[in-house]
Image 1: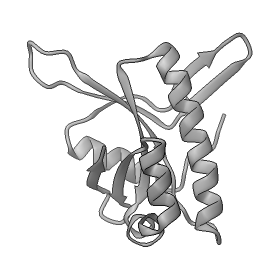
Image 2 (image 1 turned 45 degrees about the vertical axis):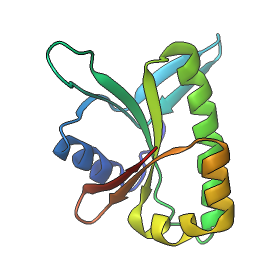
Image 3 (image 1 turned 90 degrees about the horizontal axis):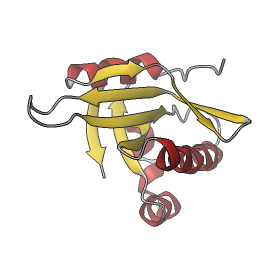
Length: 139
């Protein structure tokens, strides 16, 4: 089983505070005959009784290593592969990359991360790991 990110529970609690129901922890999806991915969280929010629920998958990252750029390379590659798998099996579910507010306010303001997020259409959830809240949604 894959290890949970250090801030996994903080993001989970933050989503629950915004009325998201955690349906999978982790969300396991098979791709082909040999591969399985495990996205950190599968969540759902009921919008109204007569409407279908909104579904998302969330990959949580901490950006705590000595190199934020290395962390970003790893996170982006994982994100793109997970999105590919979701498009093949759960098209109704949108994928988000959850990043801590400290990383968003520093590293994600640099040119390369901004260009990559735009180019690859990465949806972000910015979270506060101390207060366990979602600070911002970026589509």
